[in-house]
Length: 220
Ligand code: SF4
Image (cartoon, rainbow, N blue to C red; front, top):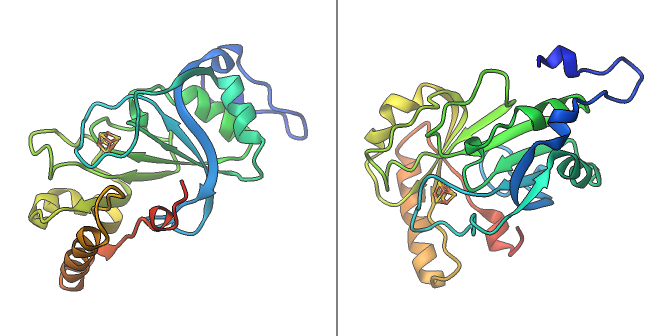
């Protein structure tokens, strides 16, 4: 079904495709919060965290295998309960799932869609308004990055040579390095990572520092 077919007649409520409404997604959580990192830091969003991932990064703090299967109609209802038109699909790896049904339901209601992805799965043209790729080459040098264009390239810095991103950088408008932050580690451990990332950013334009401010504040 095309976007046009799912669009509503001006002034009327959207006419949704029953197949879209019945689509099932593994949902870890849906919550309203302020984006804490990257280009949109400080802007409220509804986060839709989808379950499962094709990687296993050692710093990953998401229990992406604990999810419930939800119909899109119920996901839509949860999203619409918040007074916020900006969505971030995150995970786990959200691109493991067919997001077109949710796209049609949400775009028909005026939502702006962003995704945070590890980049291993190519994103269909027109599916997402804002693409943030966070590649994990520093952990998985042999994993192929298939989504090579987007709005934001956001990399967790653990001392890797930034040359590994030289072939990717040009496909993205904004470039962020983020210190590895683990709340199970000490202030000193996290502070050392911050200092190292800050030092690298100072001498490696156009990389900018991204901080996971939401973690520092203890919010989602
Ligand atoms: S790609 Fe993201 S969600 Fe998957 S294991 Fe790595 S950090 Fe976790």
